[in-house]
Image 1 (tube, rainbow over the protein chains, first blue to last red):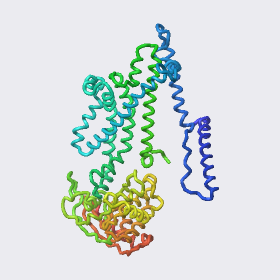
Image 2 (image 1 turned 90 degrees about the horizontal axis):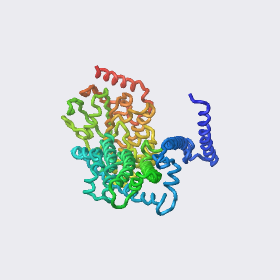
Image 3 (image 1 turned 60 degrees about the vertical axis):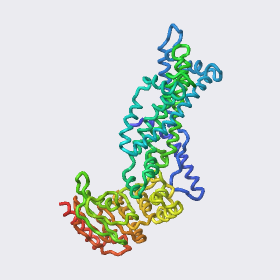
Image 4 (image 1 turned 90 degrees about the vertical axis):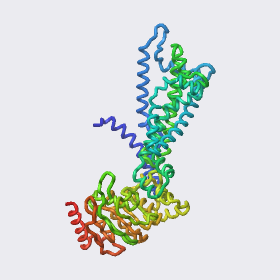
Length: 312
Length: 233
């Protein structure tokens, strides 16, 4: 059973929304005519119920962080270093905001190559991944010929084959791109293939009755119906691409070095640990931003017709 | 018709459907009614016997509305014409006419998920109407709808039938629907499907909605119902 306290909180939010909707209705009627039968759209914007739960978990997380940091005191270094306090990371990792050698600006400069590798890698993964899936969808034989190797792409420990990769692709942009694609392409291939093969059987009959060619069927039926699954694949791949480009920095040291290099070179000395965490936080934020951008595009692409789209 | 797995779906079924005729096939579920339609349309190859049909001009209405969810009503109605290569201006014009014919004017810009079951089915009908088919095949199109919507769509389908004068072959398991729509009702037995009865429906077109309550109508429904009971035993 709900406690009275809970009820009153929910009640407040509800009433607030309703009165707005009512006001809109009154406006519509005062105009002399109702234009539509549908209720006025709910106010978009950010509502309290949307931001309170994530804020609470964030507060709990920061609290746990301080608690853990407080237990780890390094006597030799005279500081809490395994996990610095959040405010230490801001003060020593991110500050000063705009200086050529310290703080935020160098981190930002290291982010640029990471950004390039991630975005190009994701784009290449999308193009290649969809192409492979389409090919495998064309014939069962091609699927049998290629799919096992797509799985191998995903399961091979990339770290173990870095010497081979260096030999093949050098140590610069190219090899970073390859590592990123190796990680990001699998979810795109599998999701797209799944989507293509889940096309409704009756829809296929409909296209057969209209003498549709294989190409028309792909373009007007299979690809659109695979779009939601494909988008889910791209969302997973976006996170993978960020990880791939950062991991590549740990093993390949030539060319434009990204945030992974910044993090790796600051792992050893206790004094640089706040910088390491600052770099890690930036890399994480970057991953979140990529995920949100892809999510936004996904939503725009399918929201009109797919069940996952925003309810009207 | 014998499927590769040995299922003997349709045995001895033979009848003609002429333009201006509306033949309905009723039978217990699994008696091969749908298979009959799939053979007639060319979706399935027959293993014996012959089908003579003008394949260039078939309208096929599925059990499900089979609308493409990413297309609006207008674009869905245009689909068949688009796939068969009708030019853009003509198919737009024809689609608008078909939408008017099925009473969906005002909903052209909506997506299927915004439509009710009945509206989806109308949209599906309109999609076939665009090509003015000479043969219309219906595979239990109203089976999933509620009674009220079904009767309304029956009325509308008859109106379309009078307007277009196609040859109609309709599959259903509703006896009342069969009698109301058809010039002729064919009753099939359980698998392997055979024709066990064949009735001519004595009503002229246009038919009024309330012939459903006339004694003659009920009597015919009763006969068919008895045939189906026998078919099962």
